[in-house]
Structure formats: C-alpha cells, structure tokens
Length: 433
Image (tube, rainbow, N blue to C red; front, side, top):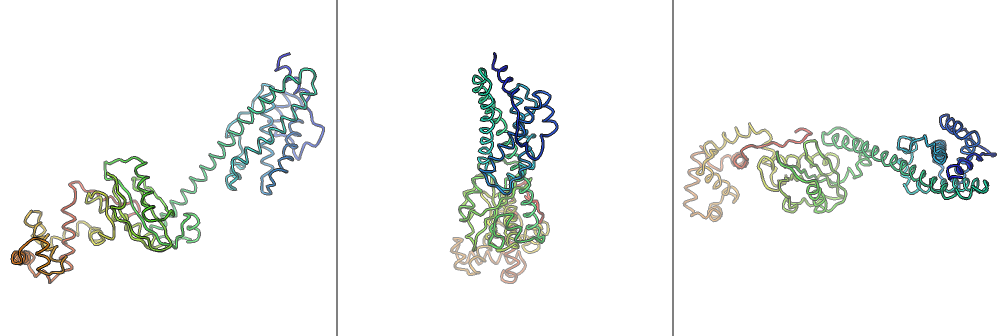
C-alpha cells in the first residue's frame, strides 16, 4: 500500500468523542473537511484545536490574549494541515489569511515573534502527537506513515509561521508609517507656531519638548546629488558633536533634512568646520533655545542659515550665530539692494576700486574706528588710510561716524550680494518664511 493510501486510511479513522469547544468550525472550513474527509475528521479538527488551546493556556498565561481570534486562526491552520495530508490543500497559506485583529493585538502589545513561533510549534507538537496516536492504531500500515506525517505537519506549520511573521511585520510597518505621519504632523504644528499638547507631543516625538533644542538643516544646491549614506553620516556626526542621542529628523519633499538635537541644558553650538561637511552638501546651524517656542526658533534659524549658504555658494555652510545680521537683512532681497544703494551710493558699485574702499571701511569699523589698528591690519601707512577715509566720506556724502549702524549693515549686505553665484537659489524651506 502506498504512503498516500496509508495516510488516507489513518485520516479515515479520525474522530473526536470529547468536548468540541464553544463553537463549531467556520462554515467554509467545515464544508471542505466534511466533503473531502467526512464528519469524523471535521469533529477531530474541532476537538484537537480545543485540546491544543487548553495546553497553550497553561503555557502563556496571557489574560489579554484574544482567544476567540486565536481559536479561529488555529482552526484554519489545522484544517489546512489535515487537507494537505489528504492532498486536498484548498486553504492558501498567505498573510491575507491571518486575521488583521490578531496581528494588531500582537503588534500593539509588543509580543515578540519568538513567542508566536513558540506557541505555534507547541500546537504543532500537540497535533502531531494526536495524529501519530491515530496512525499507530491502524495496523500494520499506520507505523510506516509516521515520517510522512511529521514531514507534512512540520512543513505546513513552517508555511503558516512564515505567513504569520509576514502579517506581523506588515502590521508593524503600517503602525510605523502611521506613527511617522503623526510625528510629521506634530513637527509641522510646532514649526508653524500652532498650539499643541506639550505632554502628548513629548510622548509622540520621544524627546522632552520643554528641553533645549538645537537644529541643523542639511541640503544640496540645485542640480546636486548625494548618496544617502553620506547624508546619514553627516546626520549622525551632528548628533555626536552636540553630544546627545535624543535627535529628531524631518525630511522634506525638496530633499532638505531638518534635525533637532535635544539636551537638558544649552548645548554647545558646533561650528560648520566641526561637521566636516562633504561636498556638495550644505548645512545651516541654528542656536540652542528652550521649549516649544525654542523648537521652532532654532529650526527657523537653521533654515535661514541654510538659505544664506545656498545663496552664497559657500563650501560647508553657515551658522546663524555668525551671520544673523546678514540673514535678517537679506530676507527681502529687493529692498535690501535698495538699502545698499541708498546708504553706500557709488561705494556699492561692483568694481575693484569700490571693493577696495568697502574693505577699508569694513576694517575701520572692525577696529572700532581707530586709525592706527586699522592701518596696521590693512598694511597701510596712517596717512594713506586717512586719505582713503576722506575719499569714502566724499562718496557717502557724510562722515563715516554719522550713520555707523546703517553703513555697517549696508556693508554686510554688499559683501553678501557680491559673493552670490551667478544663478542664485533662495533654497526656501517648505514651511514658509
């Protein structure tokens, strides 16, 4: 007699005399079993499921386990197992056959995959033991089918463990993506100054919102590309330099990456040089600020610093603390250019002579309008510097000490505009001004 015939003979003897549990098999499963294997096999599946679940109850002690859902899933698996033994496997083994509520419960409560596998293997051993007992009762052919029973039942359970794992992984991915959407929404509310529940957002973002935040914006000039590993390396370096593992990351559709590192006290703001920024990446670094308002403020500072870095075409980037005046003054470029023309007059002209005079005036201000230190820094004779200052005052139409604040601001803007590449990009961030 062939193995298939012997298996059929064993299956034909299956029946269950004891309790069949709180409910019968699902209609489709019961119909398949009854039509293919008879009423006895149908009762056997229901009984074997209850026996294996009783044993499982004694092992896991989970008061929150959704036993009705587990029972339905277990009946489905054992039905598939028996039909495969009879070479009538009509129930597909795939993630769609795993009840969504069961996967949700497993993921929501953080049940390890190893626990799920262990539970399924426990039921496999229970069912296999029952089938072997039935086979040993069929003499003389039953003993010979024991290896085939073990192989078939184990193979079927392997497939279902794989399907369950896929379903759980997919549910974890769905939950992760849903959480990422909530995280992005919370960040967008914070940076647009919308009211938020501080405690709820703290739990969602997993950072103390009342702490100190330091932001960095990372971007690539138009037309540039960068490998993800290079970008990720810079991200992690920023966190290490600041000295905190509490980091939040937000990526825009334009390819800009915004980072926040949160600390318990004001962090040391890293210099651009500390980050060793690889080309063509550019960074903008904000200043540390506390609380929800500080979360937004450091973001805006970093974003504006990145915008300025993109405008200048600087290698590496810009720190807000080093360029706050230029950042603020250049927000409205058209009016800023008008201001430069108004304050500097012909001194704003893009020529070598006027550039030299602007540098002279800038150095004069940097040395607190003292002739000797300025002349020394410029490598000029004292009288030569005085003559240059006379020339500058003639161009300005007033003494350099009459409007020092306006004149110095105009010099900052003039330097900014003369350093721009021919095809400047504003690099504005997605959240607006």
